[in-house]
Amino acid sequence: MEKVIILDFGSQYNQLIARRVRECNVYCEVQPYTIGIEKIKEMNPKGIIFTGGPNSVFAEDSPSIGKEIFDLGIPVLGICYGSQLIAHVLGGVVKTAPVSEYGKTEIEVDTTSALFKDVDPKTVVWMSHTDYIEKMPEGFVNKGHSSVCPIAAMEDVKRNIYAIQFHPEVMHSVQGQTMLYNFVRSICGCKGEWKMDSFVERTILEIREKVGDGKVLCALSGGVDSSVAAVLLSKAVGKQLTCVFVDHGLLRKNEGDEVEAVFGPNGSYDLNFIRVNAQERFYGKLAGVTEPEQKRKIIGEEFIRVFEEEAKKIGAVDFLVQGTIYPDVIESGLGKSAVIKSHHNVGGLPDCVDFKEIIEPLRMLFKDEVRKAGLELGIPKNLVFRQPFPGPGLGIRIIGEVTAEKVKIVQDADAIYREEIANAGIDKDLGQYFAALTNMRSVGVMGDFRTYDYAVALRAVNTADFMTADCAPLPWDVLQKVANRIVNEVKGVNRVLYDCTSKPPATIEME
Image (cartoon, rainbow, N blue to C red):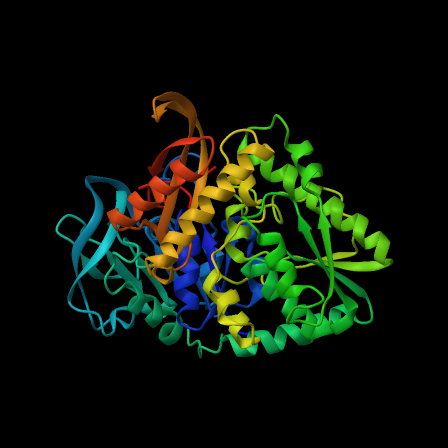
């Protein structure tokens, strides 16, 4: 399978670059810059992309790479820090810019370049740099500039090396996707064969070969990712699969019964289904814990222990299946990249797991690709496009210690919020929305009595890929109705807030 690899030099946009390449129907993977030349040769990519990063190429201990990568004959595209690194390694000069550039910037490009085919001679891009390329390496030609950046793009066509000072992957770069398409499809020569029908077919065959006549246990949460993973495994190995649904007491209101109705004995799928009610067990483990990373890891380990116990009851289970997806993997830490949060089924796994192997069939897919795979598998749209829900559940939508009382508060508030969003007919327009419980208590008044209760925070975002997100401008009358209902109907709440923060700097979840 043809692929492009993205070498990560600490960019906050590494996932976004990968997502944009996938939109060109080209498979790609994010790898740490320390991967090594031999591993790159082994992967045999059609192209290589260097990401941006927060460092200066001439700073001590800055991420770097050897010249030999440019001798492989594989097309290379450097973005921002990646472009400066190309210049620095190949003998150019990089210096601190007299004027830094941040935000939307108009540049002029040479449209005779293969990289800028079908791009306007003047186009708006997203800049974010304090260093700049003062002198190009030998063999390079200047192909773009802005009013303050003399070398915004350069190329060495003979060696198939391209470098751009801006970020084509972000939506603010108006024709950035065209540039990336030109690189992976024209310059790298990729055919664009990465499509969901071929992925599903190939994955089913690979799983069938891997599992053989072994027994498989699937960790089924009822969310989009685990549901798609379960149906994919069911298609591959049939009755060799047992789905274990752990109700950890951190689900949305009535969700445990809803999951059982879909996947249980009377549901739509012919699965071996086991429901484990472990609410008190999880509450006990989380008692007194307030730090979100610790909560994630506790929930992750306890999930595994429950699955191990159920596997022993079934007998001789070889494989554990999880609905891990690519953002989970990257956000849990990739090489030298910063850990944003440990996902319960990635960074939250305990060191010792009593299974022969863990199968993660969706590990290399983004959320929208998972949904496409679900549709390809024949899963109903209402399940495929249901609201995303994190594996640790309400444990990370409750700030501070998790208690049964707090869980009920956030369940009831969230149910009201989701009901009113649906009543307003705007549920299909939002990427994700939910209620969270803050750890703040404040004075209020109800009737003629003083209250000292919790504040609920509402969150709603618009996003195409869940890697970046903007706060959704919800209608004020909807917010007002939700707030009124929550404070009147949910015991223990006297204040409702709306979170207006984008991602970044915040994450979508509130923890």
